[in-house]
Image 1 (spheres, rainbow, N blue to C red):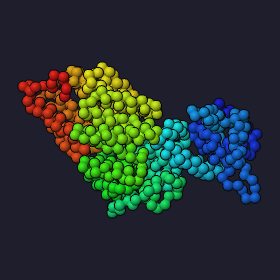
Image 2 (spheres, one colour):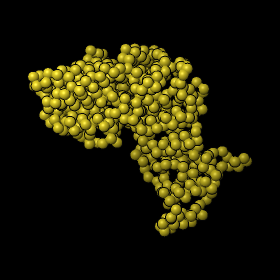
Image 3 (tube, one colour):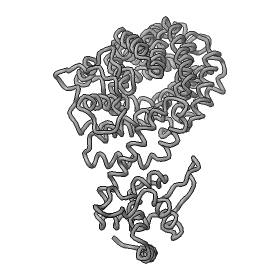
Length: 544
């Protein structure tokens, strides 16, 4: 490729500087090229020191020498040092120097060893930091993983390129909860599937029930035992399920439902690994198959198992998950509040700020369902403060949209509408998961306040999103809302057709699982359409 004169000059300067370096300085400089976005001293000491001393000779570079060598390279303007957000120094190479050092690394035939040491260092960083995300060390753990995320992604790529299943499984399982907390769904989907592709499908027929495994797959470094390897293969596939691309994947097809049914058969109740993330995600296979009674039974048994094994954090997580499920049914909303209260108390005691925000949100939903809007708003507001403190922007956006919906019900329409518009303005990079719900809430509010054309425009935007089978339930919400708008505008035939489609969707097993009351709501709209101009209309307050 063409090299610009300035680049040629810079390379000549680097080449000249290289000739002046000592042998240890050259070794450290070329090995630094395997990092992405810089590194901390501990990482440099692990990667840049000699791996194994030569026979009958001292190593060229020992780990205790690295700090001094870095100082020398900084003095020679070959390494840049700057304090990081945690106050420690980070070391990086400028682009031209990095390219030159990488060439020297290849010439020295050290790339494979240096990249391996980089992979091991960042796999261990992810593995030992993951438990910190569940307690008082949560903020520090999140900050560290965010700071080192480019190196972690590089480690993922190298493990995959080497087809090292054990290493890639360990990395994915160690980062799974971090991805969940920050809603890094695309990364979770990409790497869980990459890891899954390196081994056989543990859910393929014939179904083999999972044994009880008290140990986490990431409790110790790889390689994994045969039993842990099979469990790790199961768990990365569960991460793939909950990280699905809702707009492109249909998990309601017969083939997918058959696979999900095998997941539920493999993971029986009473297993310690189904209490722990990501084993807890097996419950979503039950949810997607649309069996509400089995879902509640599985959640009840998981809570019992958590209590039996003394798993506190896992108990809090299952309680808040059960609270979310119960809150969708008005008759169970009181049980949801009790579960959320227990979950919140545990999270507060453990110092899990993210979990506390989730528990507050679950309690807010239960209170919302019972019409306790002021109390629900208090819970959502407190949850937002927790999430903001962690920098969990996607979680904040979701909580703000729920708060806005509650404010609309409380008669604070102007403020609720403003919040919904603010959430939509964040764009898909920050608020991808919540944007459809926020747009639906806004559209319904616009309809209730007589801005029918604007409401229709928002709803039609949503129809372009909800086209997969998995999202058919939400397409049903939108068609039901459009049917209500048709009624408000006197378009009775269109309203009846749309409401009939909405009712059919609402009667599907998945819809009955998530929103059992929607079929009745759509039937009321259909009744209005049938009554036509002699009907009662939308009501005094303009509600759909």
